[in-house]
Length: 159
Image (cartoon, rainbow, N blue to C red; front, side, top):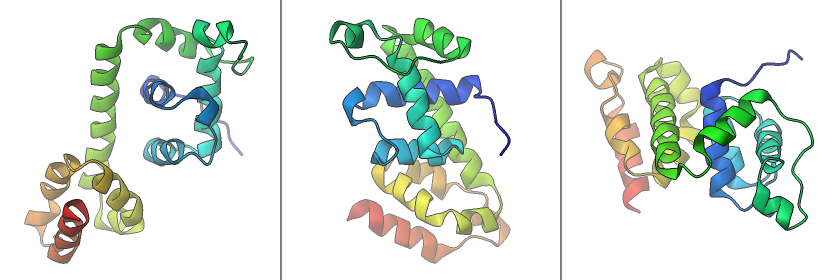
C-alpha cells in the first residue's frame, strides 16, 4: 500500500477533529472520526493516529500524565502552533475546508454521488446548512437532477 503524506488542509481538519472530541474518546470507531475520515478520503485508523499525534503536543494532556503518540510530522507541529489558542481562526479555516470538500462532492459526477449517497445523506442530515449547497448542485440544471433524492434529503433534515 502506498503511503500518502497528509496535506495542510487534511491536517487542519484533523486538528479540528482533535478539538471536537475528548482525547480519551478518540478511536477508529468514534462516529466523528469515521465521518471526517470519509470526508477527507482517509481511513478512520489514519485519522485517529493523526489525532494521537496532536495529543503529544498538548500540554494539558501532559499535565494529566497522558501522552499522545510519540511520532508526528513537522506539519502537525506547524498546525498546532498556528491554531492552538486561535480557536476562531481554526473554526473558520477548518469549516471552510470542510464545506469546500463537500461542495466538490456535490459538484462531481452523478455516479460519484450515487456511490457516496449514504455518506452524503448522513453528513447533510447532521448539518442542515449543507442542504443549501446540495440543493444548488448543477445536476438540477443539467438533466441529471434527481428530484426524489432531494425530497428524500429534505425529509431526512426535517425529521
